[in-house]
Image (cartoon, rainbow over the protein chains, first blue to last red):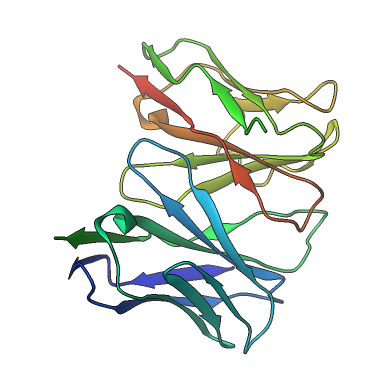
Length: 113
Length: 113
């Protein structure tokens, strides 16, 4: 069974204070690792897909990296508008045509002035 | 362009009643997914449609839950004899084909009294 563990559960940063969020996973045949951002009362918003170890992707102040066992979401010089819950999900090998994502419980990020 | 839409945004019902939740995917997306998210948790997979057929319904918790997608576009999640434990946010997502990024709607918050 695919499993995703995210840490820390919550993180409070000062504006401009860089940090990283961790996503550890176990999956049978990784087909993709996904990062989403979720604001209160809204659906998850797609950020990145990573497919193989060593891959990196960037978007504004966010950079996602992938190894064979974990992924990191690096936040450089965060701003208050980066405050949200960040969700990590994996997509494992195809079973019976399935395509589900298995999510972690998320890291709740708060960036203060 | 328009994203995934879900109606209603909120639904309050009484224990034992029947409810229907609607999802309208992004135009042209052939794959459609339903997830359920409880407070403080990540989304949990329920069912996946490729076109009109349910390709993977392994996440449906029991036979009170049923979903259809008769014309390969709009989908309806149906819950019979609702229980208080069914209270959650029900999220719908769509993707161009299986394996691509999944884009989520805003969700329907279901409260069973």
